[in-house]
Image (cartoon, rainbow, N blue to C red):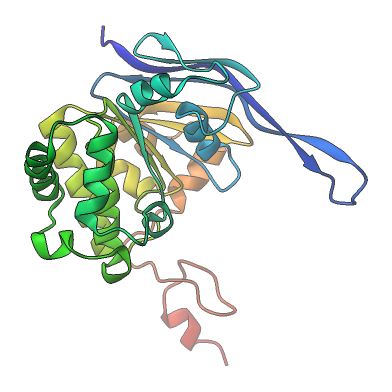
Amino acid sequence: MTESLLELRELRKVFHVRRADGGGREELVAVDGVDLVVPVGGAVAIVGESGSGKSTCARLTVGLEQPTSGQILLGGREWSSGRVSARERRRRAGIAQMVFQDPYQSLDRRQQVRDCLDEALRLRGHGDAKRRSARIDELLDQVGLDERQAASLPKNLSGGQRQRVAIARALAAEPQLLILDEAVAALDVSIQAQVLNLLADIRASTGIAFLFISHDLAVVRQLCDDVVVMRHGRVVERGEATALLRDPQEEYTRRLVASIPRAGWTPMRRGGVAGIPEQHDEERP
């Protein structure tokens, strides 16, 4: 049996938000009894539409939010406790790292790429300046960046290059788990494919596990072994990625699968419907 790296057990998160009518506050259940397992070296996707609770699961896992109830176990140790020491935060950072959707917001705009990676290594106590420099070269090569890009500020890089920097910074901690929260959603389709190939190569060469958050089943199909489908904070279906996408059992999952662009699909036109062939527009008076 494959060893578990991450386990979410009956995970629940309730936010208290202002009522729409302004009359006090009400409960918003963002995550409601979620169970999930990511095996060592595995790749599991959480998919669902906006507001399904998938990103909240990611934020709970890395401690950016605290669960209302339930357990988070990483490497067999409890992670769902409240306040932790700085030492414990550093230890956890060496196990799980997160890559966000918008690398421009998650990177320090004043730092050149090399300085960004050097800071990440210093925080991990990664040797002297010479050893850190050698490790930075390895990280740059691992994510497909060169020395010219290493000397650049984030504003001078493309979206794909910035996301490669974010991935390199996460890898500097040598984590066992990489949590990718819509990490390719903002990228052009061709750049998206390059970054997905990069992630697949990193997983193959390092054995790192992925928890991949996405609304895009076409992306998930390329990278993940298993899929968990969420809606309104709950898991509605789960299974092996290829089998689930080929034969979804739940109506909600079938709608998600049906939304994957196929040959002959065209983007939505003003006043039209996504997926209708272009000649349909020409028939209108």
